[in-house]
Amino acid sequence: MRKQRTAKRVVAVVLGAGQGTRMGRPINKIFLPINGKAVIVYAMETFERCEDVDEILLVAASGEVEQLTKLAYHAQCTKVRRVVSGGTTRHASERCALDALRPEIDAGEIDVVLIHDGARPFVPCEKVEQLIQKARECGGAILAVPLQEEEHIVQVDGEHHLQKNFEDTTIWRAQTPQAFQAPLLLSAYDLAERDQFFGTDTAASVERIGGPVAIVESDDTNLKITTAHDLLHAEKLSRHRRF
Image 1: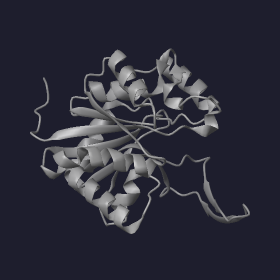
Image 2 (image 1 turned 180 degrees about the horizontal axis):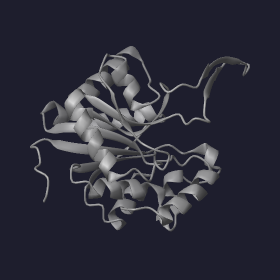
Image 3 (image 1 turned 180 degrees about the vertical axis):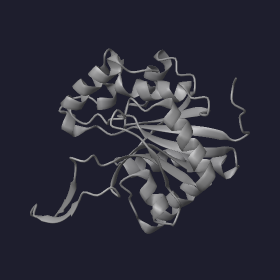
């Protein structure tokens, strides 16, 4: 049985404008293959399968709009309606996406916007659905993973001297997607631009204006492709992945 849909739309923004210099490859890492399929295509296909997602908006690096458009077409991702050029930072790329969506958000046509890093190929559809529900309930929600027993995070100074050690159950590692009620997210980014604030992730801009952000627990299979080792690990995961 298909879920009953709301009149307003859910848009998934997939960021593909980061070059990923730590990968050590001459091309944007989102185009690198995992078992013959580009990294970003896995994310597109997840949102394509999710009934709660109505549209996918892709954010491309400068000069790569046509390449990303063709990739979405050949992947038969019919929910991809727009591909826009991004900025030089993650925050700037998110701003470009929201500017493209502004007329529909202002008109009350978009309910929830998800922001996802195109270098995270394996987010499960059920987690996307949980995020959308949480965002509708409280304003915003992000995927996050609690620190494992053997993990800890340290804060260092400019000379790499230890300043503080974090290793308790209150510390979680944020992931994407991050989902927000569309008007709240647009307002947060307008205020960030006014104040010249540049967040490290989407939630940072919402948190600074007092917007609520809930956690949906994830795991390490929702990995981000950053290094060549990550790409090899992703290839192993993809062979055992359930759709």
